[in-house]
Image (cartoon, rainbow, N blue to C red; front, side):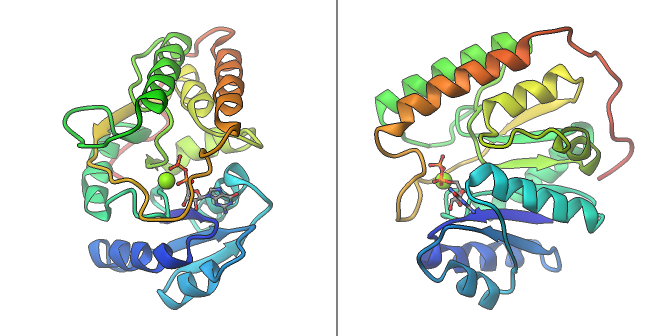
Length: 234
Ligand SMILES: Nc1nc2c(ncn2[C@@H]2O[C@H](COP(=O)(O)OP(=O)(O)O)[C@@H](O)[C@H]2O)c(=O)[nH]1
Ligand SMILES: [Mg+2]
């Protein structure tokens, strides 16, 4: 199942849903909307998505989508942006990588993804990745990527106490520390196709600081070297 959190993505979400349905016919696409002042929900529904409403914010939207997918018994769950940043063509590769992982992250910073970010943002993301790697005890490259493929068992293991407000580098560190096999694969990504990023504006420095603290918290305590949660093909 594909989960697309979306706020004010009316001009983009229809194309994203259509592209995913073309690449993976028959796979349910769930758009989780809240806080939009445009026609995001209506456009998504017209494109063939199941539309859910959630409490406010990105992390709550994800939680609601994950809970829905787990209840529906989805064999795998992919979260991706509804802003055309993440190419649906990358989905088969992510799912293939999930065959020997519990969580696969689509990475902008592995290989030649062609992704361009302003230097200050690149520096902040790089510093956060280095910090998260230290906290996790595993080298992580793209800790803020919103493109992630999950085994349902891995989601179920984390979703009960899934962070309420932000779910970013901190969640990756939690996954590693709990013994989940976290892999990254290079994915070519674009800039969002329009609209505004939730990380634009003066709040982003505060966000990065807060994320660094939350990530450090996940790194405290013993690391569980547990057996993997999933068995067999996805
Ligand atoms: N439902 C919901 N979706 C959100 C919210 N904030 C961001 N999103 C969506 O989450 C995805 C990631 O947000 P985005 O602004 O692209 O973050 P960035 O890729 O890190 O710049 C996009 O599809 C957004 O529309 C929110 O408050 N509620
Ligand atoms: Mg985005």
